Image 1 (cartoon, rainbow, N blue to C red):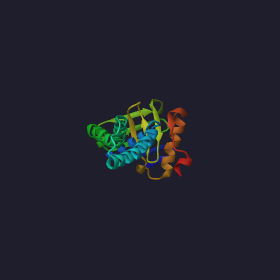
Image 2: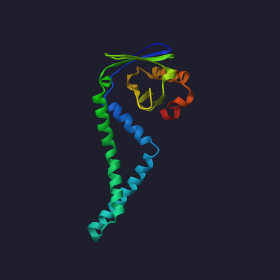
Image 3: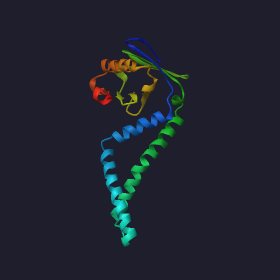
Image 4: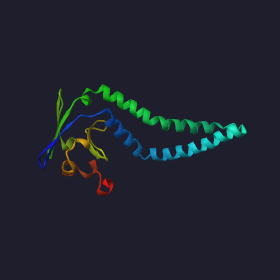
Length: 184
């Protein structure tokens, strides 16, 4: 990784399967519908523990609704496993993810060089950018993104340079960056 000028950031990125897994898992659990589901599952788990005690001690026969709660809890437990398997399949199927990406960010465009191809995208072709604690995700469409782990940046100045390019190059509704409060 090197920074040639104040308006250019150059990175060499070797994505690992775990990068995609962590990012997708984190984004899934940030989803507005998943958090209440997790809370309901925790309440359901407490309910089932008490229900199990009643079954063992009193011979209680649970209702059909109790079994639906159990299925719901099992589904939430299986969610990370499903995400891991999906990411594994996607990474294995996509040969681009297995190559070193040489990325160059400027105020005008993003360039990505791989062993087998070269991509140049002007910022106005970018669908959106999302930043979280460990990654930048540059969406090139609704379903495709360039995942950039922050560990490949040399220092925080390089991260701030990329952040500045994003702010200067995209309309406000196309990016969601971390604020100073989120960084602490």
